[in-house]
Length: 355
Ligand SMILES: [Zn+2]
Ligand SMILES: [Zn+2]
Image (cartoon, rainbow, N blue to C red; front, side):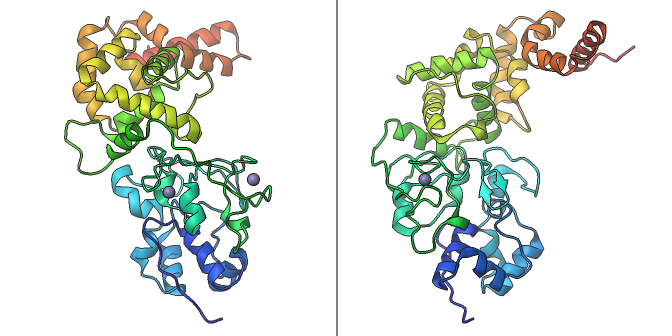
């Protein structure tokens, strides 16, 4: 086989580049990778997220690219500095999962701009990040599935010469063509993740805690309704759970609502949190990793104005949901065992050693 090469585009994903390589050779993605990268599994894993050094070396060697170029087509290579270390199985915040199931994709983590995609059939790594919801070039909303059948885009099954046809329903992927509201707020939010932001601006960890807070306990969901109503969006009862699993359309409301709140300044945010009875512990329930901005600027304010956060009754009230979950898991146990398990949990949270 005479090997043809196409240079990867800016921010292109590895799978998108391999799809283009197969197209250059007139082969299906499967045949192309089986012939040019024998023994290496690409399509049954999330290769755009992380690849081992051996796999990167093999792709670089077989397909005439430098290792750095191949690595920069994965999220680990390109966004590792902003997001922290990305390993094979760790869950990294802000990266949306695609739910690999054999060669299919079960989750809607790969967003795309329909206009960019129809122009060049290139998928970008930045579209996998949960802080992006608009295309900067076309100012149009990103979509995360075929508009007709809601199936996630799967390049493995996409016809090499008809990338604009959905592999599942066979209809043309058309651009919705609407320019949505809140574009400026969404772009302002995604700019918070650039390396040039001010030192006292919220860090990615704190921003994620604020987003997840709005999808969790009732106080957080009330805060979400308030923030949404300020930008004229209707409250939603459906968006719950982990931030990265929320669908694009829903995130496109949550992001501008939060950005509008952030732009009102620290004092107003603290007042909002207090007004919705959100305590430091409430926020800590959703906090993972470092939250420098919350620790430094928000928590001290909450502490001085809140009721004592260390009392047992406050813990019981704030931890009601997680505790009920623990109870549910112990339903087969006796009432006494459940009560003891719950008391033990509170002791752990308060740091009381067990007698
Ligand atoms: Zn675009
Ligand atoms: Zn479809």
